[in-house]
Image 1: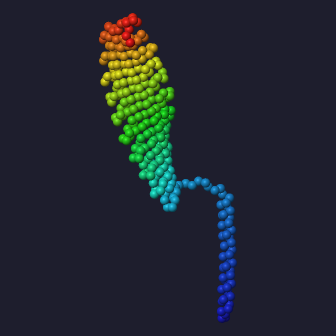
Image 2: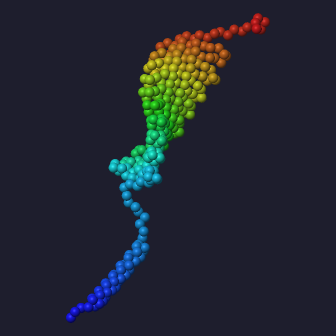
Image 3: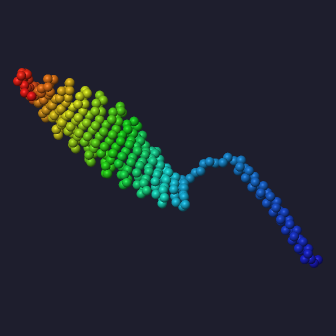
Amino acid sequence: METKPVDTLTRRVETLERENRRLKRVGAALCAGLAGLLLMGQALPKSRVLVAERFILTQAGEMRAELGVLPDGSAGLALYGRERALRAAVSVGDDETPDLRMYDAQGRRRAAMGVGPDGTSAVTLSDPRGQFRAELSMVAGHVPSLSLYDAGTIPRAALMLAADGRPTLNLYDEQLTGIARLGQGLDGSAALDLTYRDGKSRAALGVMGGLPALALHDRDGQVRAGLAAGTGGLPALGLFDRMGTIRAELAGQHDGSVSLNLHDGDGTARAVLRPMRRNWDSTTRRG
């Protein structure tokens, strides 16, 4: 039987309609499935944790901040200025010590703050070359100190408070040898000690028992001369030999006169020189 073209066309149209209906059913099922997934996603709790090893914030294509973990295990945050110039950084090292650093426009460190492994906290200031010039620290957790450095980062002056609150100022030479010390004694009095480069005292000025005193030392650190105000404010000058034994003493007296005492090698007074006071008659006095 010969097939007519009209019948062939009709069968093709019916086939296309069946496929179209099947595609619609599949599409409807897919849409329902996607809708279900969306509804399920809305029902699930949203995660607020973002895990990464490095974050970079940019502005106009330039990096302005960076948060990351270095190969040594330390974590840090770096803040940049224009042209990617590092201006500040905060980090926690692999030894778990925190550190904050600030930089100038040339990238040199100018200030830093941190806490050491032993609990010592410090703030450091640097010059335009990036060299340490000043440091404020809390040593052993309770002793504050201020240190000043020269251009070679050698400490030349240090001010600190002892555990009992007594202040001390130390001055050093370029070899880090103490050359001067100003401090407070246990009795509350102040004392100034001047030291030579060999570390031995050369002069000491202080207050003992509420009275001022000056001591001069030789190269061995032995007292060779002493000037003090004694009881009643009377001045006294003592000269000592190499063994520290007094050999001569010049002292003021309550009557206004001055006496000179000479001592032997054992410190025993052997001679006293004192002017005799004369009583002048009022009629013979001259103006």
